[in-house]
Length: 422
Image 1: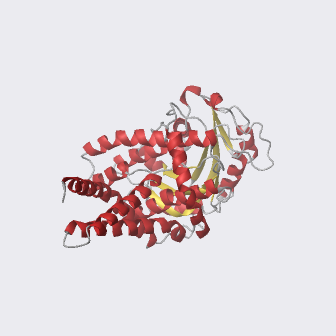
Image 2: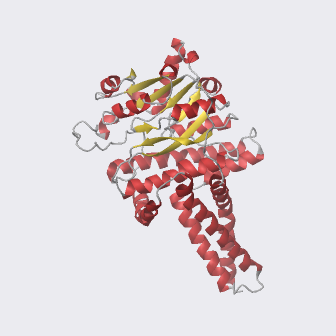
Image 3: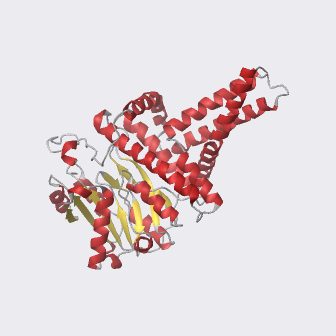
């Protein structure tokens, strides 16, 4: 073997070792999700008292529909209320929410805007009034969302099982609107469905996704809400985790949010905020988790792998490329007596099986239509778009994502320019 071939071999071995933790997690999550039951066993009669909280900043386009969706729960009306936090609004969000049947709390604090600050404000007001002690749990729903009618019934079952932190399945409300929403439906089913469902069955905490979250009041007394960044939901899930607690995943009830049908600046700003916030938070948390002696070695290892896992849009193509490199090496070596050639072939097969199982899991487990598989042809275009918008400026603060008005709706007033939200 020439020196150049030796260098190539060691490089391939290094890449395989670096990819192995992510590949293992992918395979374990896929197999666990594919072999698990999504059904939640419901108690005979519901008893938990919920407050559905909808943080809203200039959400006149969809707030009434969201309120009506939440009020239409198949749950005793005496056991839940719907409350909208009209947070630093410059439009008629509060009036529309009230007309749709929601209780409204108006908050005007321009220097402390974000969902994180809004939730903290509401929790403090509930505690001061004594209402907090009369509730069993808060459910957080985004202002562009439709909740499945059985959401509170399923949350009630989990709360009565002793769970204090719960995340339901978060997916797309308008999947057939465009190729982009079809692709997002598939991606959401992977990241918000298959991964947390599979890993939660093995005892791993689910992340919080900001939409469809449930916190019990007893849990909030132990771990108060203290998350205000660009991705406050993800940040708080790690606060809960590092406090020695676990976020449960609820796979058979959902919240469905309306996604932008097209790309453009609104989608680019949203993606920059998500990715910049997560990247910054993961970088900080990695060192903290590495030094955290309160976590068991196994839990710490899983947490470190999670924090270093790249976005799926990057990870899956990289694993497939690495599988091809291993396959090329194994056949170039002739699969003779060289053990490294057989190891390379084994890694290739392992990667192909893991990626294949993970890729089909959304169709099998969460019922994504098989015809959406054709939309995967747009993945290269979407990946290029993500690389392009990644070169933009990192958001310094939260800016509301622009909404697309519904068909036949007057677009005037449907959005407030980003400058108005600064």
